[in-house]
Length: 323
Ligand code: UDP
Ligand code: MG
Image 1 (cartoon, helix red, strand yellow):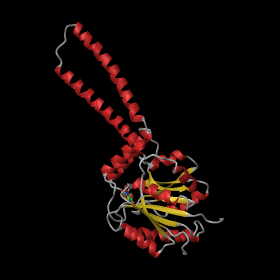
Image 2: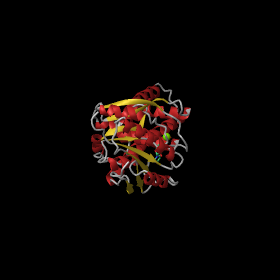
Image 3: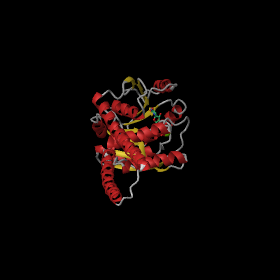
């Protein structure tokens, strides 16, 4: 192989003090073996993005950087911007410094040994390499059920995502440059990256349990994430209202004709219950419709304001430091 290229790992961290040391240790070992195999350049780095943690996360990142400036870098966000924004903040900070970047969670759930395969696929000409979970045995039944339902529901709703792929992926410098042109505020990276195109492929790995600490994605956040994904990438919910509206109209014409026949036949009674039912049904449908429209209006509002998606307070990185 000719000169090895520069790999930057971007690792978002929110209250991850319990896992950071272990993650750093394992990543360093992995990098050393990749450098020995001449797969990545010695200028490669691991960049931890501190997403407004309340614990010692940033302190640990700073210590790691001081102990090993030629290896660990850190980005400190001014406030908690959320996982997706933290990942983007890291990627946009390093996009000029690397040839390829891999995003990975801090909790060691993604198998570090997949990095080899990702880098190899990159040299084969792939601009994006998706890390895909082959099994979810280690997730609780509840997490597995909700997460797999999420991917299926996304597809039905018209937002195309890679099944069982989260945010463990390799992207080339070219892809990062294109990603920089996406100006949307409601980030859903796993939907945006496939939109960029270029040659891509998947590598499969088994997802492990969280090394320590607990999930920062409780059900509430996961639901919000799913709704964000659908409304950011698909207008199917809007079209669904139209479909329901058309069906309701046809049904009401039939019901009208039926009521008319009953009336002429002289069997009609004052139908209090049916009236009540229709009021509730139509009221409910209208509210649902309004709710979905409101979701989009809220997004237009956020996009129009075009607020910065993150604000970086510090960036520590020694590109020239010796190994
Ligand atoms: N994370 C973040 N900001 C947040 C929430 C999470 O940067 O507001 C990071 C977190 O530190 C971890 C990754 O995003 O590295 C994924 O979170 P987690 O492992 O808690 O999610 P799960 O794997 O349970 O879905
Ligand atoms: Mg996790």
